[in-house]
Length: 355
Image 1: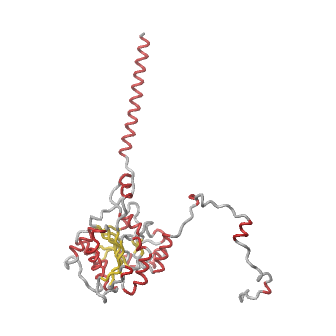
Image 2: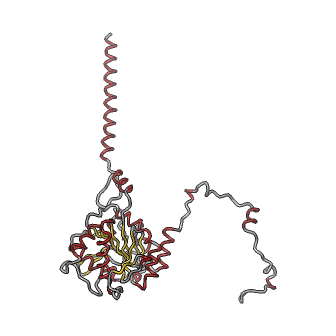
Image 3: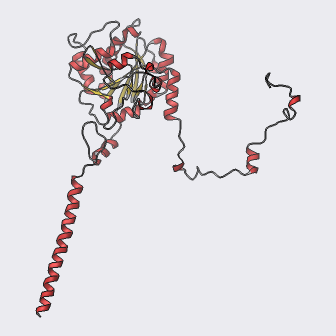
């Protein structure tokens, strides 16, 4: 009897030890799981997977694109924007000195004031027009020139981590006369709140924002206005975690592809806050904008980004499986060429001089 009681006591002790071990193991797993943070993209801080999924499931940011043009460029550059990347804007308008309804061109300055020397006036009045007619309908407001090409999907990806109701100013950050600003040629973006501050605080004040003048330095002036109304400057090189490459390019992409320093003008190196690199390391894989794009260059970007496909042998569908052509199929689909004229080369009736 004593032996049985001793055995039973040992069994109880062993059972208790095993139960305690299992409970402790489960508890450790739980603590590890809840304390683990999964790093993923965020503009300001690391977010959980659930937060990322919520952002990606949200509708894409609504972007109004305001493209500056002039009457002589409407049928060339403006039309090229309209036929390519402009179709992906939530709304596209062109700011010029004359209306042209078929492309949505709006005259925001006097008919004689549409040239390069009136770029600041056109930008200033363009944003005023956008504020009066569209401010409540869109989240972000892009300003671009008519020789800029924009990859809208990458822009929307960039903007997803930011709240349009906070004062934000995106672009390629530069500095001049100790004043920070965003490159105008590379395009820049105002949040809804930044646009409101420009229209209601900066627009009318000659104290904090330059007033209309010919030959005004458009992007430099806009930088002054944005700073003086408390808008945050977001350099595109720092807008995506883990991607420190520029995303708004002040030059044509070809300028960056050469390893020779002469392809990058000295003024860009002096004024850029980020390092200007060349070759394939020049730019982000999620680049947003390229300046100095001719009509042909815009069509080239459009084809390479949206039409050219790279064949992936790892994703061959059933339809993609191909069998070798038999000789009979080869003869039927690709019959032999008629070589009657070249069977005797000495008798050829037509041939090149150096044949």
